[in-house]
Length: 363
Image (tube, rainbow, N blue to C red; front, top):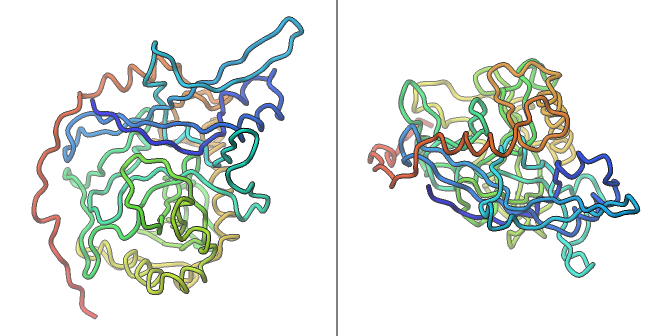
């Protein structure tokens, strides 16, 4: 196996809120004071069908009692008995909403008071400039990241000139689900049965499995093979331009051509595979961040129904370790068995030079 570590400002610990004896004020206090640390564990051989990236949460929550019946929750790293922490699902166990770090009682970042400025966690699946179609495996227990397979072959995105691979860090918002049983009134299509997709337009090239915090800027209403496939446009909060980019119009002003390239990319990326151009609702117009946040909230509500077994999950695997009242919740021991039943990590296999081929489309 091979492990990688990422520190994120994800602070909403569902296991904490599961305890009826812990007050909401205590929960909020901990959310503001602490960061959660996620690491990844690679299994199998990269660039093959058995390659997986599993997730660990290396921060644990402890409830301390007293004779007076009071409780004091605390968050700390796992000890030597389990230094890697607990295995989790990036789909179900990583919170959608990111908290605010606070040190010595003083917030290190301004607390967001406007709901349109809410910061979200993003699970990076595909780094910018790469071609392997990596994605959260929604049908496998604990939902590791794996490479998509089409017609028995590993899937690589074609390079449609002038673009090389993905032109942003591409990933998903955890704890969201585009319900295939819900027809959207704007797109007139049902959801694509996946977490909602995100394009991070920041400068840093991230790694697969990295959990970053993003500020939502807008949304593109893609219709992919007659399914609604929303594309959130966001920026890493740590990016040097994040403070100055707060809207779709800011992107047009400070990153001219990026939105046009994004529209062209999504329209044509399947054409080299013999498929027609993708379509868009709203004539391909990017909607603003308020619209985007509303869509995110609705997909979060669909996800809640999914993990509480109030919606038809179909082939979706909802196994998790921390979602309160979920009938799919499993023990940390069971989660560990799932990961260790997969193949040990091996050095990466080679990639065909065909992956670097250019495709030129007629004007």
